[in-house]
Structures are given as structure tokens and as C-alpha cells.
Length: 262
Image 1 (cartoon, one colour):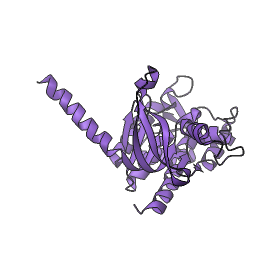
Image 2: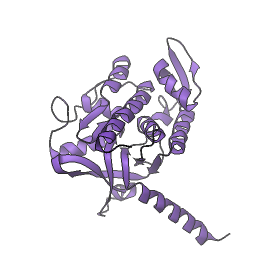
Image 3: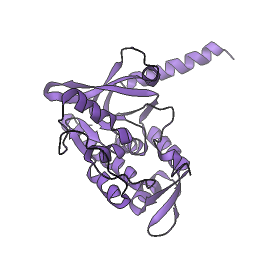
Image 4: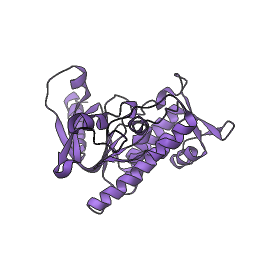
């Protein structure tokens, strides 16, 4: 068994995958439940999709469940998506279902990859790429370790027809847009409004309503949608995250088809 052969197998296969992700239909920032769900539905319909996750693990806050108890809750609408993924859900009461958070994360990730989406971890979004009319046409990326180490190393870019910000509470891509281009988001002030205190029922409803194009070429999904539009957080109920991911895929597909047919 040749150690160099092992190393070559890893590097050659990875960089082939990375090169394929440099020109895609949809680029998704964040491999949380909303981002991976969006990736699954897009890839399933034939859209060339890549997801860039800054952390070592995928799943966002879902693996931690509620207060490190690895269980999450979904309502009936969210359960229907989990049923499609093949994730088990046990009925509790009041129309709520208990789900093993680790089973949910691993299954959604697997389904998205098998549908054709590329998920690349330990890569951070450093900036957006724009063209005429200030339309977002891609992402500027760097290894997460570069920012963590505070190294001054130039990034690389990838091109896409639409970007989905699924970076969670921090809504990183939207904040980059505001910082670089000014308060031009489709919110009341043009800026990221910031999420409100917990109100699960309202938060679950509004997260789907707020999943939309927030800037030309940029869609917001998941907890980023709550943060951008100032909706309440909802805690360890995740049905809205899944529904937001599915809705983001629908909006992205419409934009991609306007740019060029899939």
C-alpha cells in the first residue's frame, strides 16, 4: 500500500470536484438543513449545484438538537419532506414529531450528494462577484483556515447564475452585500434587520414567507431569512428550515431558467 498513491488519489479527485464547482447554476453558502435541502431539490431537477460550508461538519445547528439533546421537532409539513428523505419521525402530540437530529443531518446530506449536488466543507465565503447592474454572479472563496489564522492570502472565485445565502443567524452573504454595495437589500431599511426574540409559531411561518430573492441574483433561506427580514427565532423546531430550503430551490430554479434554460 503506497502512501503517495493514497495522497494522489485524494488530491486528484478533490481538485477535479472543486474545478467542477467553479461554474454552476446555483451556489449555496452554508450546508445547514435549509442549504442542503435546497441543494437536494435543485440537483434532483438537473441544476448544477454546489454548496460551500465553512465548518468541518455539515448540518448547521441541527446536530446539536435542543440544548445538546440530539433530538429535533418538526410539524406535519416538515415531516412530509423528511418522509421524502426517508428520515424516521415519531409522533409526539399536538401535530409535532420527534426526529433524531443526527439521522436527519446525515440522511439529508447523503440524499443531496446522491442527487448530484457537490458539498465542499471548510470553505468560507469572503466576498461576492458582481457584473453590470450590480447583479451577483458568483462567490469569492477561501479556505476557512485562512480566515481563522488571520492570514493574508488571496481567494479564488466561482461563477453561478444565482446564489443562496443559507449561512444561518449570521446571514454572511447578505451582510457582505450591505457592507460592499450599501443598504440595497429588499428589506424595510435595505440592511439586515436582525432576528427577533423567540416566537416559534410566528417564526416558522415567516421563515418560508421570507425565503425569496433579496438582491438581484441572491436568495436568502433558513435562519438567514429570519435574520435578514427581522423575524423571530424558533428554537429546536426545524420544519420551517426544511420548507425554506425547498422554497429556495423553487425560487432559484425560476431565476436560472430566466437566465438560461436548464
